[in-house]
Image (tube, rainbow, N blue to C red; front, side, top):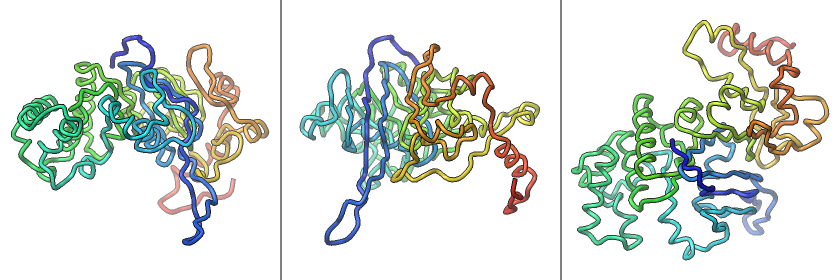
Length: 362
């Protein structure tokens, strides 16, 4: 992790990505929208790793795919290195593709099983006309060596490799054009824990070697903490907290972040026994019909009677530089607002009850 202090490489300005809901076969009526990303603003500095976390369905992968323009934004701006790329067509985007690459979540589905590894890794070079066949073969061997694979891997096929090796192939392909920015969409979630550490260390090594900037998307908070300079927490299409990595874990301010961290086990039985886990009520609301005002108020253990249900909390920067979208962040931090007793009682009962048993009414 190395940030060189220069201006931002990427800026998202009130980004929205909606997917239409349609009804009928003939009329094909537009009856609503899935608000996958709803008013997201972020900056990523050159040489920085920004971790983006949240539960499944919150829209974090959609953010990453929209940045590299696999999806078209509905509203807002994507500014890459000072240039607004949010409305560019495919021909105008082509030169920028060399500077932005993506590593996908599934290391097998993202590789063409009919192509050899050499053809997969060398494809970006041929597509952009940067190398002939001989030059491409030499560059492929160099890239495979860089990501820790034997050079003879070029003649083999994806099914002959393990999950970790396949992810290394995907990373080699992403590095082929010497990009400035890489979106890593949950690149280790499908891998064993021991392999995850190897891939994370490889990401860090390559960042130092090639001066890369990462958007690292994940749901594993431990992984994100290890690799990220800053972390953005996402809930139901919106950013609810942005903070330096260490500060977020030491002093989370948004109730959603506090709840996420309370669910992370600590490998110390004494400390773990003394913690009070927070159990979120209900299910994740539908992004087609998100709750009014604060989107988290339907599940929030710290919810207050009026303001949380009436006013939208803006993402505001505190004096420490910590950004949070909660009306009561300072009060929660100071301990003036506690989780509701019902939440704590439900947690205690859940620990004591057996599988499938329901707690009595509180």
